[in-house]
Image (cartoon, rainbow, N blue to C red; front, side, top):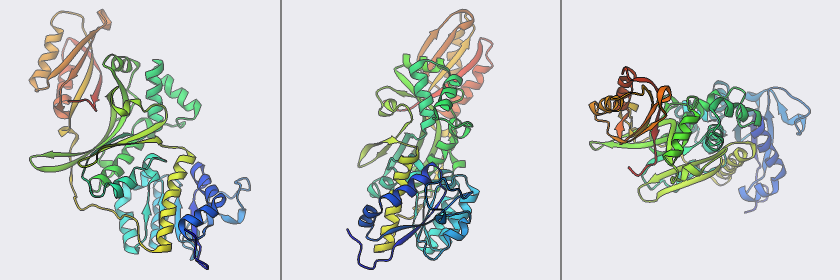
Length: 436
């Protein structure tokens, strides 16, 4: 595809010049000829909004501005790329861009998890595009397959590893036997974790991504507040040791699921560390890599794997969206719009059914096992297996259950905490991906 003689260039404004923004700017400038051929018109950088104008950014200073609002409302800007991060300022700027009739490409999962509805409606009002492939899994294409390739299929489940920091930490704990604090410190030193890793290790980042995935997969608006969330900070080296004994590993999973009970469909979106059997494809996803598994009725199980973060991988996804938005400007047409026709109810966590691993520190005396088993039986939580580890003050019981509701398991754990023979309930993890 080549551009027609006299074809008007497509003007692009980039908001932010950090790791991702700098790479987007580089690609736009260095690959201009190829991009023009793919789009059918020249792609021209109109400006880059930054907090401070400096001469060490590697681009002409006349392209830099601290006036983001002035840049995005210019008549020669057609598409705005937002890679600032945060919520309130990006919300204001993206909304202003859409209201001005500009298409928007963003990598901002936190913004989308809170305000997808508002921004989608603003885009619809002006009949412009809102693209966000980079918001969920970096370079891994997940959004476009869900909105386009699987548009004629019925998605039942999406689960994945969508945070590289937590996956690096858990993988390293599994490989080395080190504890959480030691492994986190090493991840910070190597640059795999931020100095303040809260958003990653407590599951906030993954919850935002789960909200986006659930909204698209199930045609229902799901916000980050609808996502049940647990982080990895309570995972111990002992949990990983027990997981290995069960032929499992531990992964922080984002799970989006269609739940059908009594003929009624509901949506569950949740994030938590879980035991994953070694034979499951997600168990082999290690280091800072991400992977998403989609289960649909006609297509079956599909897996998307690759680098889920970083400047170049994320910029790749941003550029893919930018090319699509630019093509739409040149040739007419629009990208997929928000689909929320199903408007399904969000299922409470208490209704979710899965298997559980419960680790108990117990008194080393006769009758402990029968007392523990009785509390499970009272709430119809069936025990699949029990392991006793250690002796004396270090005695532990590891209980693996069959499927039970989260409420039944939570009530059981509360009752176990009150038993005289149970010193502490040290860990409770769910088991996902098993055959049961």
